[in-house]
Image (cartoon, rainbow, N blue to C red):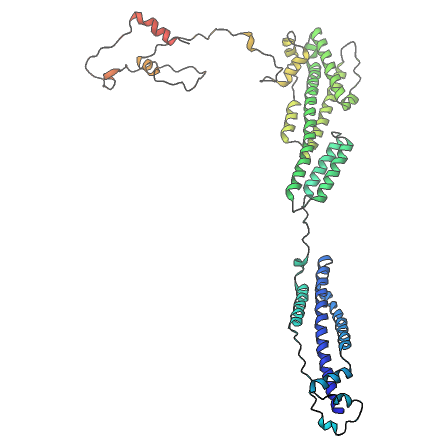
Length: 457
């Protein structure tokens, strides 16, 4: 009886061990996959250190406990095991009967109880468990840079954005663009900086270039208007300075015309520039003339307005919205000397208005624009233009037949004062010395044909 119980107990313990091992490997494999996945997710999203994630091993303890409970619940009862051993040993039910009654002499008839050999083909379980362990190790040991999600690297355009923002501020302060347009450009710039990505830098740079072109075009239009305004202000300033310095040298009619022209130039400039209109002094003088003090105040106001325009252009240049050539063009337009203006007006006032004269005086002599006066229709004189006939040597005449025109020059042609005697025909290579030859002369009846040949158009 005791022997049977011991045999059953050993068999039960062995079966329980195998079941526990089987369930433990299965549950540990599942937990390993879950643990490794959680490690990767946490490291990717939060960036938690791997050592902290080792706390997931605590879950493995609970998983093993669950596996043991499941395995123990699958172990057959003692009665079921006794029946299985009775059948396997061929005891014919004696082992089952021995559980309740004393067999007596029947025990001698009962064969030796041999429990069956338990075999578990757990290769697949061990393989899956090993893969889960490897997965957990890799998820914990892999460097952090390999598990981070590749985020879009921002494109560093802070310097370009600052430059464009400064340009927008200057255009807004100088009232070149309206406030609503400036706000729209600033919103586009902020959006561009927020969406700038290193994965697609071409798109970002194209947007920056488009915005820069928009600002440059606004600045270029304003600069062109400023240059045109400066040209008119310079004409008015030059005329006022000429009246201050040389007004006493003008006759009454020219002085009146100059005053009227100055008034028109100033009024036109004041209409285009509110700052000039606010700075203009009281120009009410005696009749249509201005006093010397009024002319000086007017010249100072015109010069101050030009200085304000230059400051505006300088600010645009400081933020790279206009180039240096525009500033140089302003400086050239803003400079005009009034010395000798009175004589120039007196000389040209009969054929041109004072406004046209002052414009030509400030612009200077050059090819000029389309409104420059034409002089080609006045005709030319033939004085000193008649050509002087020069006799060509016979060798020069012969070489004309083989010559080709390669260009024209306005310089006077060179004339050879002395030329070697012509050598034609078979004597062209002969050296000077004794001997005789026949020279062909041009007969009088042929001179007309030769002359017409060289005078042909």
